[in-house]
Length: 406
Image (cartoon, rainbow, N blue to C red):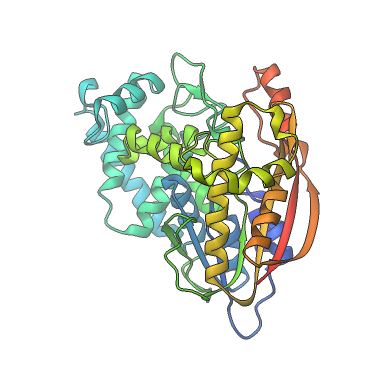
């Protein structure tokens, strides 16, 4: 068990910004005794909380709106037949190479891509990789075995979501702030696909034989309206999106467009996600949250636009915590890993908002601890952006771990 957790800590299967530290989950979930507990992460991200919960023998349940997050979390938590995936990957690559020869540049796009999506692809991918990605993505999409397809897509995505050298013309995609820096991509798709599959397989913790662990349930869903029964969850453990810090879909869309997600749909998801820098909150509701925002810091120093964004965040988190309260069993536990941050020079206690909203929904605070973020784990901008680096380093210096009881 400890070995599995150590491997998960050291080797995530796919780049993902601001991943929850696995040891937080390991240290705060009870060891399985006679009965598996139902563990929920309503904003699952790449699935760290669920993979640890499953490794500990619990029933893991997760939801997210980001299609790439769902893909990564599903792959990480699924039992794998590694030999079957290797065989299929080799077969898929050979088919893609044959298909590549028939693909003209004019047709080097995902199926059913609209003009906005095509323009996006032309900007971020060179001519050779556009054709290779088209051939490989089209071939993967035809795989019938759903589990194997998930692993192949995850290996495919790892070629694009990278820090420095990938198959796109960008760097820093894995930090969600891609910058186009290349004229030709440093890596060709066909050259690295099988090695990406192999790296993925080495990091997957669950094999299809020799293990007796509950199957994880990971589905598309919104934490503001969970498709779960009342009083059905024993423990919630989650890390809400950091206010004004990370736009996950900004980088993820470079991968998602090849899985037939249009730019318009991705933009809609970005603008309606929790933590987005938008405000859809009805004006009549704003007064409900102004007082708690003032308790979070000197928010009056911030622009009206930023304050509106914070009001929207408070509204969204109110809905999330209301849902957590609803699905938790009596005496159930909810743990939030929250990042306090600095927004345009003003320190903002996001953890204070969570405390306030949990108190509103009659969740009793049991513990509050502070965890300093390691320097090499903070969300950082591209290496060539020194000024931006200073600003973003100030945003997140510590996490607050809050545990509540229903």
